[in-house]
Length: 266
Image 1: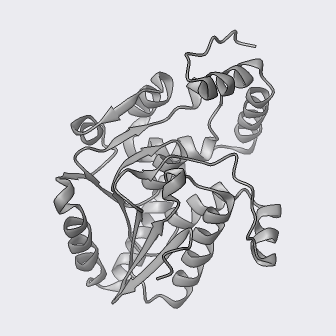
Image 2: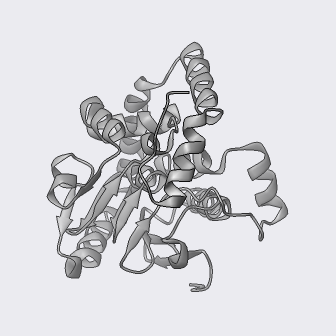
């Protein structure tokens, strides 16, 4: 494991671990980090020896604070630069987690916000410390979240909870997070790693064909929520309108100035 890397990688038997390692940025998801997640999961999926993946954050404060829009890619290899040019790195990483051929576990060691929470919901199982905090802040910033991300939330917690989460843009903690179905297991922080890895080892010890076959069928069933081309185009137009809005600029200013935004709907 390279501890100075933004993505630390561990392998033990048939369990692999990805550690989001940007503690100074609360493990925010930069383009470089997202592409590294995609590349390592692609590599592991092709050799089929890693039959359970655990994803967590470094430190005890944050799983991930979300997408880092200010991060400037500086260490991209030619392969990574080409991927960033032709694909949205966030969507690429989320799809790699969700479509990994074997089960994945999000070990929430701290708060998970925005795209960081989305990353956790792309995992098959979520185990969290009992002091976990989560939230989806797009509505506070004047953003419209991308449809595939919304679909991933609906897949896990249903339409009603997804509406509440996104419409309120509120922060939820502890047992609230469990009751909403965002996490499957809520445990004392001292037992978090033990709980997650005992489950990972149990899963990885099961029949590989059963694991991969069941996951593939479950993903196929969930894909029934996919938007039509016309609906997707309409969603993209709405998102573009949001990006051009005065409300987005106000939301960004208010966030920086640590004040409540004054939205005008324009």
